[in-house]
Amino acid sequence: MGIMKINVAVLFGGKSVEHEVSIISAVQAMANIDTEKYRVVPVYITKDNEFYYGEDLRDIRLYRNLKGLVARCRRVVFIREKGRVRLVKYPGGLFSGGPICDIDVALPVVHGTNVEDGALQGYLKTLDVPFVGCNVLASAVGMDKYVMKILLKEAGFPVLDCLRFTVPDPENVKKVEAKFGYPVIVKPVNLGSSVGISKAAGPEELEHALTDAFAFSDKVLVEPAITQLREINCAVLGDASEAIASECEEPFATDQILSYKDKYVDGGKSKSGASKGMASLKRQIPAELPPELRQRIQELAVGTFQTLDCNGVARIDFMIDKADGSVWVNEINTIPGSLAFYLWQPVGIKYPDLLERLIALALKRRRKEEEITYSFDTNILSMGGPFGSKGRK
Ligand SMILES: Nc1ncnc2c1ncn2[C@@H]1O[C@H](COP(=O)(O)OP(=O)(O)O)[C@@H](O)[C@H]1O
Ligand SMILES: [Mg+2]
Image 1 (cartoon, rainbow, N blue to C red):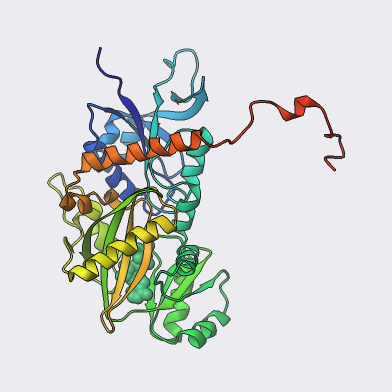
Image 2 (cartoon, rainbow, N blue to C red):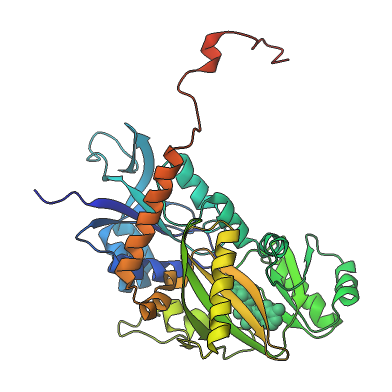
């Protein structure tokens, strides 16, 4: 008899503009999980939110023919049964062969709206299965660039001032001009990978930029553009009680704005021909920084992570204004591309170790949650009392 393995459901894909990036991140993660200790259970979420299970999902080359790949997988659903969470085939029936397996912990490797923003986390929470990464609130906050800024500002972190618009309106341009002038950056509040982001140097460009951004989101953010920009990213690993910073990286843009194309399409191709995603973006690791600045960024990164009550691994992206040296927290990615594994290797944490720590953090949170009372075993309604049809007085 071998040791019991922990069953890890790796969830990826979903109804997000970063669907393909998530596939790349997830396949990398699955290839790096220590299979002596863990059984990897790949669960692919289609753009229609259907769930599929299959061992073929671990091979990036097979995604070129997505239809064929999905056809070879089993449609599945998660259910709760006998105090456990199980992955079962759908449709079920007499000859379906019973459950595929029980799930001990879920590892969401998803990016973007509808999945990284607390939606999938809420689903996993309702299933009552421990899962890696931020809880529902931190995931939602991390996805909303506006709410994130408000919380960070309140806590004294350096974030650029901004305006948020919730309806397209000609007045928006005037409000931006009154508050900031030009140039400004316009972005959807809740997307990633630079989708819908543009710079505007005048009213006409601003109008276009706003229309563009509103096509991708119902909420749009405008902030002053840093013209002499340097970008530095730093990841953080841990939870509320303990968190550590990774090495810093400097990503390089070939375009004015680091675009989806820079990050994922043009990025170096691996031998199999598949893009390596975030890990292959033109970047310098470690970023060339004076030691004090490096330390300041690492401290701001850990502070941001803990202020937003994050868990697991997140990447915090900074902007440095070369004109005056000021440092700004730009955004947090609560499920960073490639889980930011390449930022941990330089500080001595290999990818399999990173994954092991992430799973341990998920189980630690579960143990802590179990100490908190969420419901009572007695049915209060069974005790009689003032619960008449008029309700409680
Ligand atoms: N205020 C700004 N000034 C200058 N460039 C910016 C500003 N905000 C964002 N950018 C550029 O746009 C890119 C994408 O913006 P970001 O807020 O990081 O959104 P995303 O979630 O799409 O990555 C940044 O990496 C940076 O190159
Ligand atoms: Mg970014």
